[in-house]
Length: 297
Length: 283
Image (cartoon, rainbow over all chains, first blue to last red; front, top):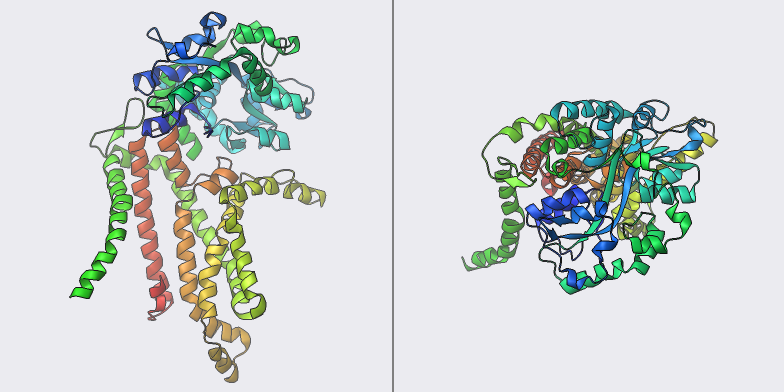
């Protein structure tokens, strides 16, 4: 098996657009699927070849984006939130709870020790939350505000990278934008690392298994997806990666301490303001160029 | 005429290779640079100069490249020259081959892994911890231009050592004896004989390192933490993240032009510096 890992959905889309990826299975996030369909980069799945996929067992909030125009193009892998991890040994006992605090701390007491993703969706989206705008905004005025914040923060950042675990673990970085599973893994190994979902909101997302058009080993692709969706296998997966799974059959197999884990299954009042990423953010030229300008500034 | 025809035939593989792998892609990049970004990213045909007019948006990347590439080249030279000098003129012939192999040994491991190792050496628990333990204060090394320079010098040192070594090794030792006989102290022999005769190696090494550095991507990405940005990093972003192939092509063309200009200037300078001697043909 060969595996490619990308820091963002955008980079993965670029590889598929360029052609010749040679992939049999790939894992896109909810907001990208309509674009893959529109660009003719994926085919509908033949669900007869994935008997382990039981649509009725999946929470429709997380399975829904895989269906476009009534056809199932992708089946859910796992879901999660985008928050941030903070090393509480540096917060003087004051817990952080908001994106406003994340950015203010990054420019203040945590100068030189904060990280943001190398990913337009989350870095721009969470900068937009500083002003209370939508995570998905493509409004030019609101994006201009987000850019102002990002450029002001940049000199204070430790790094711009989606690979933040090593720096958090070494103690170089004290705070980083993070996804559920990384938050869980870090907190499990280092209890002083806390996973925070910004009170203003931010992102909730769902990742999927899909098959790119022209996949060279179609049978193997279906066999792999079917295997991974076997509830027993999926349960072991979930225990390893620390992301929640939308399959009720898996939830039934997971131990209660996992189902009650506030990192994996946050309180309803934290979840309700979260937004699923919007397709427009993937293709919006202004967001793309804003991120590139922020990085090359 | 026949031998000449035969020679031409020998050039065919190289010519075909260059046409397909170099000329054709360059033509594509040139054409794309006048196009537009497609609605979902990628390339859409168009004809405008917008991409070139927008080049100022990547000024910081060009500025970083045009400062750190020459500085990195000079640092590599300053460190490589004494090493090459020792290897060629001072080391015992018995050990020389072994020492030369030691210079190459790092190439046996991927530059990616070797650069990654520096993350730990320059990270908070590495050198800075040692410096703090010695009471010299808290400093951050990783994700700074300094870290990128360390990575550059480390990664490119062998490319600088070898051309200089070769030119010093071919040096006619009798010239040094003559210089000593005529009353030159060692430092004057070095400045008057050794250094000028090794200039072709220095020029070749600098050229090799400088040209490769202008297109560097990996070292700033790994040791710069996304904060020390080269044109190479801007290009990767434009083609992969923003998927603006048209603007990316314009930045690529601009980089080629900048490189042609700096390399031409450099060759003019070294030629003038080395006087009218023509053994710079090594380059």
